[in-house]
Amino acid sequence: MKRLLTKYLESYRGFSKAIWILSFGAFINSFGMMVTTFLALYLSDQLHFSVIQTGNILAAYGAGYLAGGYFGGKLCDKIDPRKILIASLSLTGMGYLILPFAHSFHAILALMFLVGTVESFFRPAYNVTLARCAPQKIRTRAWSLYYILINAGIAVGSVSGGFLAQKHFAYVCWVDGVTSLLAALLYIFFRHSMLFLPTTKISEKTKNHRSPWSHISFLIFCGLTFGTSLVFFQIKSTYPLYLNGFYHLSFKSFGFLMMLNGLLIILFEVPLLKWLERFRNLHVAGVGSLLLCGGFALLPFGTTSAFAILCILISTLGEMLLFPTSIGLVMSMSHEKRQGEFMGLYQTVYSLSYMLAPILGTILYERFSPNVLWYCCGVLGIFSLFGFFNFLNDIKEVSSDVPLSTPPPIS
Image (cartoon, rainbow, N blue to C red; front, top):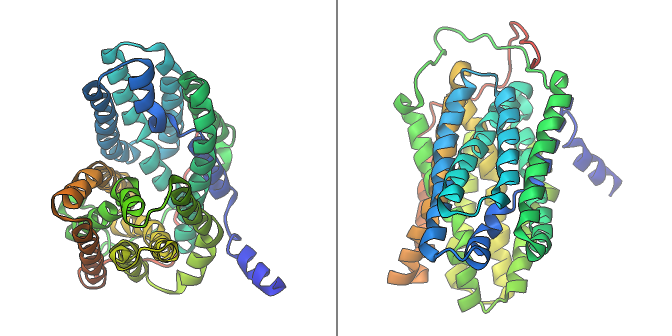
């Protein structure tokens, strides 16, 4: 038992101070990410907006988030991404602090578009910063640390957000705004510790200055990511409907499944990826996509709570394998001077799948049958596995860096 515990703790070693600072800042920020969860209820119940007006405001936020992800990534290639991180958190925090004082439809519509835009700058800036602070060998584990901490923050924040929203929606906005500003202050205070690693020497043969739009392997990768993300985001729409209608699970039981998903990620993702460092990220991501989609594809073959737990275990394992390794693959395909643009386009594809997943999923669910939807998920998983193993073999996954010079810390 002691040896097992030692091995478990070893998986968290090797992270620099910069990685821990970045991850803890993301945790603080994610703790307050609850405004959008309760925004629709606030707009309809307290401000008495119509369903169409509420939908338009949520769509404006989504449009801003979609555009901001790509353009925020491009900015990271021109401006120090650490500065973009701080600016994104600061502007987002101020936007949420102002939100309770806006009451007209057009004011809230404009504000939510702007908040969505600056908020989405965070992820590409964070990923590029982490890539430049973490050695190649531990980048996947470093991204998984970020993933488990934001899952933990969102889980805690969602529970506390329910109590705050019951009191008044303004409290939700203010907590969200304050946590964003606290994360920005953390990064400002420790800015001299967030050092980039030495730049790497790249031979002329391997140098790649191509735009992501002309990088065929990257576009194929984005297509595979889009497909698997469409499956993953069914967890927000058709998945709970199916479990309630066919498995007869209550809201409480569904909450237990979501808690199980989060606990598995928090407890096992970093150790699992530490063990998988011996394998290619490309193959790990391929197996992860199959397992993620397979967990949904198996749903028609059972109706018991135990079978639902089995399915969530399979899809959670796939989730743990796929998403952290995917970010590593994006960095492997991009040149150092265009990492932001690549990451921005990846973020845009991910956000687009988030917007389209409930639309496409409910169409298949309602017009054909739920089983057709889940079988389509299985087909996408098999296609993604085949794609990762056969279409992307030209991706070079570098295992070592040759230092040239060290960039200065953020000023």
